[in-house]
Length: 327
Image 1: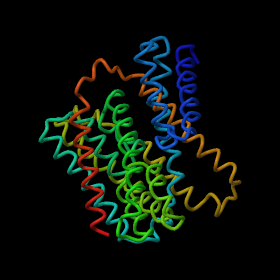
Image 2 (image 1 turned 60 degrees about the vertical axis):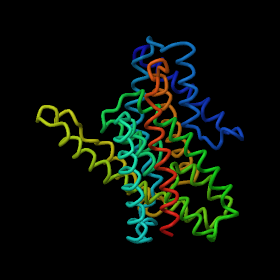
Image 3 (image 1 turned 30 degrees about the vertical axis):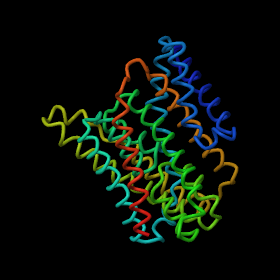
Image 4 (image 1 turned 135 degrees about the horizontal axis):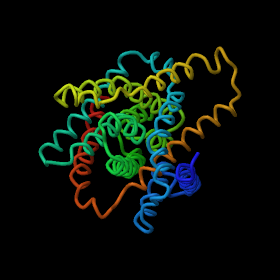
């Protein structure tokens, strides 16, 4: 392994470690380690510039390690629990994704917002925040800057909404379980869902996470739909060939199956080992976010993020209202 590659990997590893460490602080805990890591990386880039001599390792982290982390993320999706809830929950989750993507892109079209960033934010809002953005980014052929900014925006807005939900909890005319269901159907990240639902009790939190994981499950068919749509959108056969099939999603499916029906059922695995895999997944995602953040040059952004942010923010507000009305 050459010094350029190793140095870049170790540098993103250091930023990821700092992000996870700082995310334990009371205020930053609500933002999450992925967002903290990407903020550190962005700030470093603006203060000290891009470390060109480590470029190969940084790109390895932002591309290769990102796919590995998405594959491991599949272990966190309990397929059996999701399927037990039946088609009703799947239908509501599918509506959430369709509503979020359609409305965000409609606003983006009206306001002539950056298409790629708007789509990344739309998918992040509808499915599962940073993990969904990371999964669809290579399909949409988004550059590192757009991806990193989208992750930062989704983390910030999701945190604000999560805290806002806890403030509304005492005055909402719904029971705690319904509140949990609403949180899981409408909020952005799993961490934001947990943040909002935990004050309502364990039963509400369980329902919230179940609803959220159903949305995560639908990330798989959504990615395949986006692959087919991008190939058709690109036009001629030569351009279509450049839209690569997201093979890492097959790994995601396999790991979801293993986590749901093999580990702990057919194969006994110590809880410590499962916790270690979960931490590794988070750490690899944080390294990938660090690599993405190092590619962000704030001087080139200007008002690029304003319209996609407004489209996503207004969609998030309407999604909260509509999903609450559905319940």
